[in-house]
Image (cartoon, rainbow over all chains, first blue to last red; front, top):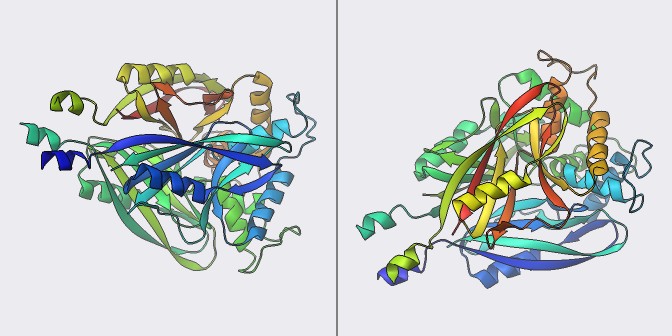
Length: 148
Length: 148
Length: 148
């Protein structure tokens, strides 16, 4: 009896997802993250989704209507212009410095509760990688599942 | 002896709070969150406070002087105007698209350490639901307590 | 055998770091945080870095080139001006109200996965305290390590 009880004790597991991006924009990763949670078998806990970069973000956004994400992207294009005359860091191109600012204004990670094996996202919530660079990139997303 | 030792092992519990909002603004939820931690009985750990929506946020803010929150709200009203001519998503009214942008600029969740059963907020920190819509809403906030 | 197995069970530990700041700007704290993880001895888990203030932030940023952080700081100086005519909260000086807004736009905490005892920051990521006040301050940063 003790043994079966121990089997339900808390544990922590890490998984990795690679996201291929093809320019500025939002890329939904909800299903990939849920698949990693299924693989871990944790039924009750949390997942932390962490991006190992400084020029893209992980953000929960509206996932029903693509026009909402288009407008979010357009807002950030206008808020953080590429040609600000006070920028001193520009060795990697005009979209480099804005990408670091956009990351600071958004998030490097999101943490989502897990109940009955499912991420508890609201009806309209999806998990997105928000790419801030123009060139194609392979982005590393680290997924940490904590629970029982 | 083993049994009593096991009783202190880590666990994870979820609670829910419904927050009724009555228009744009900040609504303090610190006491409701602490009450749920008290109910769980966790003395040492963390709490993650997660809002299941894309048009309101959860943010730790100054809780001593209401003028500070007034100015934060006014800043966001000016940073994300309701009548931007480039918005394409507006089916739910002029405060709809700005609400999604304001959520991306702030936070979907906050994680706070718990020591001796209390959230370790600083002297001036409070937990707030930041409502971005004008109409009254019932907002679902999920609370995950991890610890022993 | 049972005993040695139990020794690997999940635990949660808190540590504190004090960061002395000397005016607006970014102060790297990556090494101090890693040293606290080393002290806890957790090899596999997460660390949450939480700042107990409402006028500075904790943010993961580019740590290779100081010009990138300079430009981030300059962007925030322009986005949140000190002399906005609609501010009503100003009892502590002209940099007081902007500091609360800058905190809401950035983060109160960051959570980073730990594998093999090391924070899994990407090549260019560093953990920074982002000070928003001009006067020198002693900032309290709470570090919560969860894992085995």
